[in-house]
Image (cartoon, rainbow, N blue to C red):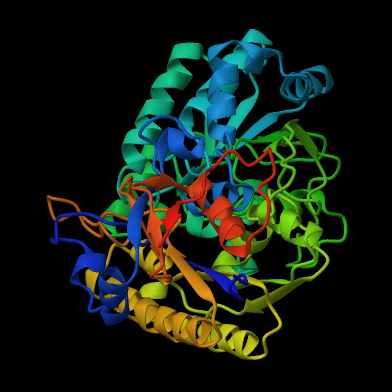
Length: 514
């Protein structure tokens, strides 16, 4: 029997499954295609969080982790797990790159700046890593340590930043090291869509001391909350001394350690500080030259700095196996999830593989996606259908961003609309695949839209730990019950009749064929 062509993997980003309907955009949405597939095709669920994806037990999954696991076909132990372990076992405090950053500042009479998303969300950072860095500075007897605190409110509740800053202040008092210098919402400091006007605001607070001024970080956050501007959107603010002057500014020759471990939202701010040929905006006369700049993990080839935790290579990812078997593959998504279907799906590699086609559809330029819940899904679907009808591809990796990106707004009605648009677009792609004699696998990488507000009616903007769907549009197969994300790539190889490499430790979801 010939293998189906194409095999299309459709990832509905943030589409989790939760029993309760209240606050659940997935359950409340009208999704006729999804409901029909559940009746018509073999389906089960996948675990997309915690140890099943290489994270600590109970830790919610995210898009980076999800796509890494899916593309690798094995559990990929994440930077969070790896760094937590190194702190626990004491290796963190002897990390040569981190120690060198501290000593460089101390030996040259310069300052040490710590950039960090201050929360325990575990998606981009963890506050414990910032605490460990303060312990390391104390161990090295370094006292000129300044923290540029980025507020979260997205991977954690939207007004939880105050508590995290209180915890940070308590840690500073405990170790006797550290001063909070600036406070910025991640909307500004951690933009990833080249909205340089946002990043510039954070930069100018950090380098020029420009922005609203407060005598301490808690005052900055309280003032923001009083204007109903919560963590993610806190305007870049400057902490000043008793004379009204900034407690510090990032200056030439200083050391910087950027303590986010996930690259995508750390790249742009890092480029501002490290790239001589940066063109995003005018950095002005005080641009700090010759920084000793350390990234906690590898951010990008476009960031010129030292790396504390280098990546571990992933060989024989799904993309590489398809190349070895002379198969053509398509990676397609809109801007917000394009790195996930390319860089992360390929095991952290940027380069395009032989026989790989990439299609990037621009995400709409809106402040937040609840203003345009359909995002660019229709355009993504249309481009994908065109490729299917041209019969160019053996395998397709497709991401619909809507349930995740709109789910982060914590607004129910727009998120319901996002799920409904996704269902409509999935239907268009599945119809095209089936019409050509192909097979589609429909999954999600983690939950989000399944919980838009919590049991107290408060907006819930983070991901969830709920299972995600696995639907295979072939009525002649029997699936085994409940898998993990690492089982998806082996299933695709199984469908295509291709051998599974030893590195892939996931198992095909296909138990038998009728």
